[in-house]
Length: 275
Image (cartoon, rainbow, N blue to C red; front, side):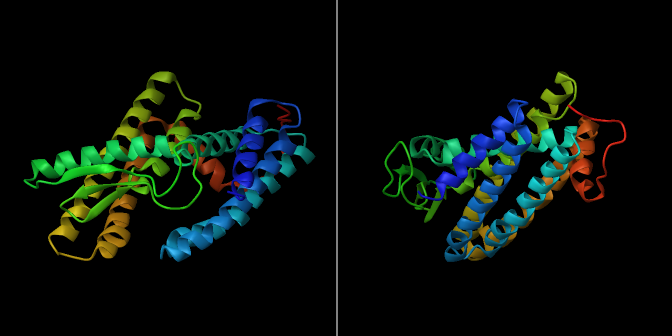
């Protein structure tokens, strides 16, 4: 609960830094640093859950967000506001706002989890299984705001598997949607890219859930291997393919990605970008 002070303050300040012009650099710098601190505080949870990959990403967040804050400091010192820095502020603040507005409100997280569990179960039923959905399990959380880290989930009765909030792919859908939505491109191509990416991510995630249940229920491999190794490897492959498809639909998205990667080569503008 206490770490959420860093979370919400960081999101709000970064969002304000994008939406208004006055004090924008100070707000973005503060937002990046606050969110970097927040992510570091999440590492112990993932370590305790045995998810060392996400724990490592949480620890990496602080130097990454500090680097973004440093670039925002350069923008202030150079009296610049390059498009790539506005893009970063918009994508990070909006994607985290969407994700945590659902994740931190159990009634919303429960509804999304139940929908994903229902769709997953429908595919499994088509495959011949006779699983049924249990009730939404809130892990001791009240409906309006989380008070603990217990997973909100829905059991697939008969399978021995629970579909939990982290199985909904919202952690991928939110940033993917923001990255595409804030790319400067004509609306028709942007809408096409959004529909293609978001629908493909959602369907791929359902198939991922089905695969984990199948491999585990049939005793082909352990749940840990199916979920943390096979499924994650498959998800990475799908994301790479989707990125290439979005590049084809909307080349401007590629320019944004290259712009972020090229930040270490950034130099003071000679054309005077003072926006």
